[in-house]
Image 1 (cartoon, rainbow, N blue to C red):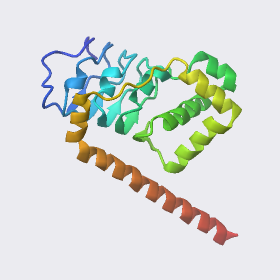
Image 2 (spheres, helix red, strand yellow):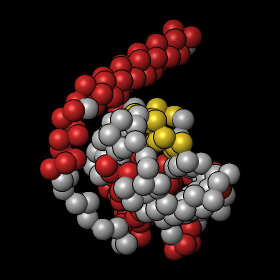
Image 3 (cartoon, one colour):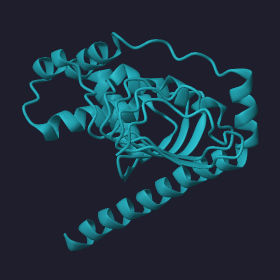
Image 4 (cartoon, helix red, strand yellow):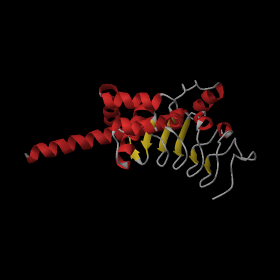
Length: 212
């Protein structure tokens, strides 16, 4: 671990592609938005309670935010970002009232609700906490939060403290233009995973039908 509490000014921000700042009392990522070439960021096991500066990067190939102090509203600051692999495990994502409202009694059930909401609210993430997100999973999550009483109540509780995501700045749009090939690769990865998942599902269904 280190005693780093903020980003050092001497970072090579115009050429930095990969940055690891794990296991430290880092409480702010302010300044990270100026790292115009950054594509891989690991700030796990720190003290972050907001990711607003990270969200201004618009796109990242990998973002590790495990074991910080992020609430669900804080995590939703990422909803305008395109992210290949996102890790959010180990954060206090669920508000206290949600556990009582949904009757969640186990770590597993709380994790499932949190993942379902993140899948619904972060449309441009390809892989969340080590598991790829398929279009069918997004459909199921959307149906739960739109059609069920429990889901609608959960949505209200998790969004009540969320702030609207600001539109990307001109600098962010310029960065997105420079990283358009990377974003296209993320989109292709998502489409490829969907096709593979659908093919596997079809094969499984046919096999079950043949066995009958």
